[in-house]
Length: 171
View 1 (cartoon, rainbow, N blue to C red):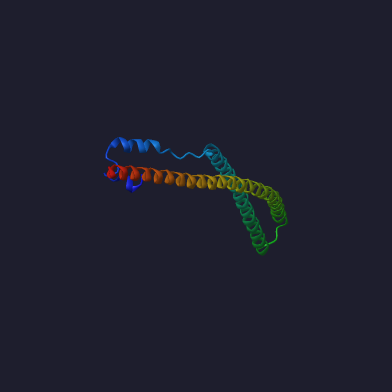
View 2: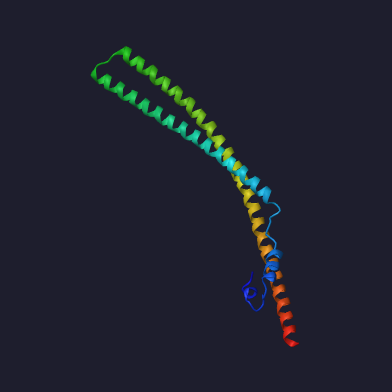
């Protein structure tokens, strides 16, 4: 309600105030349900993206752990070679090292697949975010239009009240 309408001179009765307040309609965006649905979709997609990223990080951590284990085996082999060469020990460590390398290669392939999944999930998330942002822009524009209409109605109401008061003062 504009400040001019709050003055006791213009509004002498509470009935006029109540009538004015009830006449002012509440802003409703027609696509509000669609906007809420788009937000839900975006939130679900964000959860899927985070899950894919978590899997990606887990695979990276496993590869890092395998690299550390392989380095540890190499260091052990070097230390054993300096102490004295044992063919059986050397062969077992080399077989173990080959298993680690095979597992690392498998994890690297899984990492590449997971990276593609993360990219797909990220694309979907960007698309959902873009849809939601578009609807939010429409909602803001509709709200601005509503405010302009409300202001025009208030100005008209003020003009009517002023002209009525002026007519009353003339007589």
